[in-house]
Image (cartoon, rainbow, N blue to C red; front, side, top):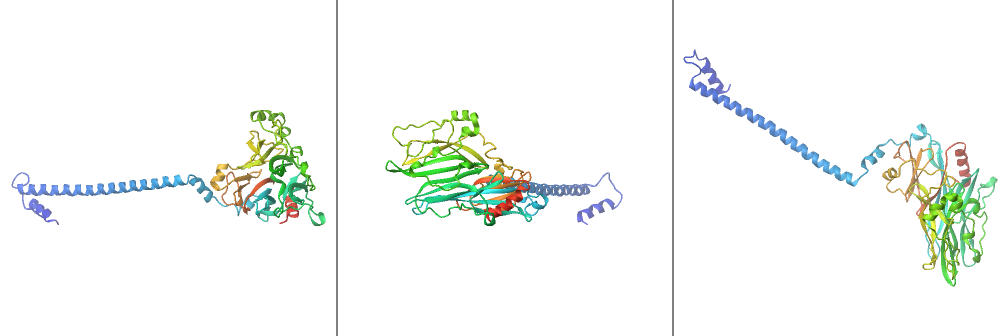
Length: 436
């Protein structure tokens, strides 16, 4: 027992009180004890309050630091939350063909542009991929040269063919019904793969293929009034406008404006009038005419020259306007976007199931994309590859298929089959006409 407590106890029980209340000595003892109790109680309260305050300050500092770090992270990764949802999404590559069978086949036409080497001219080659579901996975069924384009109940093969003369070469686009090989008949047209051995006088490049229409660029090089001159054009043609057999035109008969092509007025009718009035165009002229003395530029009232380009998952129409003032021996066009959408006669299906912003969040390097009509697949194109993703109300981050692209290779055709028996027919024909 505390000595002070013992002394107090003795003072209270040592005998009967001889005076009222406590003695002076005992009072002092009691007051001293009570004072000490208050000091101890205050000390305990101060210690508890100090501890609580310290903890609150530490938590506040911790929250402040973490919040500042989080702000920095969000500022550097604006799509962190969305990206995390893609990364954490359940990969469908192993379950999609079981729980959500893929009912789509797609033909993808690709053009590879080859730069000039030494004294040779630049040129282009083409290939077609057929992608479809088979044996429990979505895969490449066939891959072969040229553009294999479905047309009515047949397949048309579009390739570049070469024709040479003594001093020059021409490479132009040609089309023919793809009849297969072996017992089903020999495919006459073979794509020219080697670089041009001579300067290219007439060179055509495919820009778009769909339904029964093609968009192409044309470059004609020749000497005009003793000087080298280069004329560049763009045209939209129907399949029947392409020659089925190679025939090199004579040097003095290269008049592209007189070759068959599709004008905007023929495609849209009178509905194109407001567009042509709002953006007056200068009509293209044949080589040799645009530099001839006394020849004036003419207004293009029909939209004779235009093209179809690929932009962020859509085919867009662009009008061409020509400049009759040669610059360094060149006659070129300038393109302007057309406000009218392309009709279904040109592009039967051209919609993205996913938003372009969501595609770029998933793949920041995306330059193009396409979707199946039944909204089950989304293909995303970069400079180096094509990745095909499942789509179920949103993009699923795990690709079903990844395909490498060659340098300077771009999409010029996307054609879909989404019903049987067409899917199986495409697979059979694709193997026969393209090779596995």
